[in-house]
Length: 228
Image 1 (tube, helix red, strand yellow):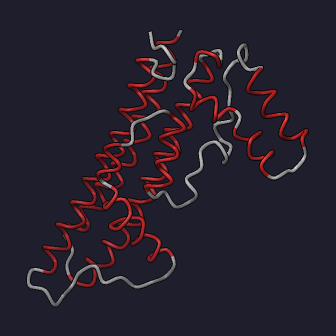
Image 2 (tube, rainbow, N blue to C red):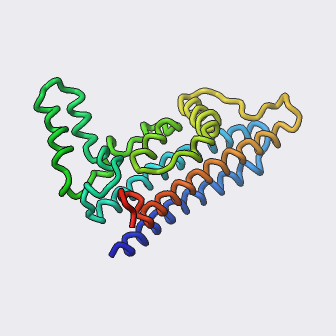
């Protein structure tokens, strides 16, 4: 039964990433064959769409992983602490907004009486997987922690995530004009294309890494305190 769920998880992630890659490949082809002002327009569009697939896949994959864990019907006492935190996140947030002892008691009651409880979260709930419509490294770091995934590779690529994609995407989305092809430089088109290609490859690599991390965690049962 578990292997069937694993195959379904793999299939969902593969199919979702596949259509995103096809769209990005088409866009990159347009960038490669453009020049001057048209090139600048395509790169602006490219950064925006690259970001949308970055956020879209991370959000989708995180939710599918949590749905997979829901399907395993695991007792909370056997799961790593990050998932227990995720399970009680709504209770904690509600209590934070109240000075009432009753609200605070819900936290202690939940924590001390969860041993026989089956792990189940609403993966579609914004509080559970929240990209904040602005998936910067800091936001991603929180998602990685919630899922029990290592952040090292993303940390090393923070510059690409923040400076070369998220910041530029935000400026473009808010109507700012960005001259991404500096015509004053010799070989301006070539340099602009190379810079976009570097960003394109780095972000796709991180997306692939996220998918691999999820499948590795699911296959090796890294969500358990003592993986079997």
